[in-house]
Image (tube, rainbow, N blue to C red; front, top):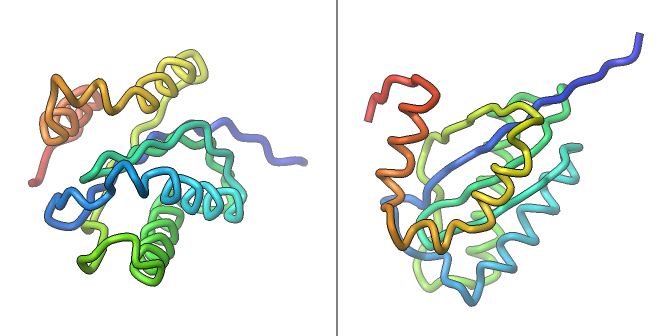
Length: 144
C-alpha cells in the first residue's frame, strides 16, 4: 500500500533572547537557505517569513520525518550558515524550543497570507502576544 498524507504545519521559533538579528537586508537570504533545507528534507514549503526576532514556516510535512527532527535540522544548519556567512555581527543562535500548529486544507490559503503579511501584522501585535494567542487558539498550556 502507498503512503499518503496531508499534514499542514505552521512552525514558529525565535532568535535566542529574542534578539532582533534578522534584518530586512538579510531576510531574503535566510528565507532561501531555510527553503533549501526544507526541500532537501522532502517537505513542501508554502510560506516562510522571518521577522527580526522570530520565524514562521508553513509546510506540508512528509511523514518520514518528525516535526522535531525537521526543526532541529533547520535551526542547526541555518544558524551555522548565518554565522559562517557573516550575515550578522553577533553570534547567531535560535532559541530552544518551537511551536507547531496543524491546519486543515481549508485554512491553507489563510495561513499562507497570514505568514506572508507578518511585517504589517506585527505593527499591531508583539511577537510574544501573537505566540500566546496561538497557544490559546490551539488550547496549549503555556509553560513559559
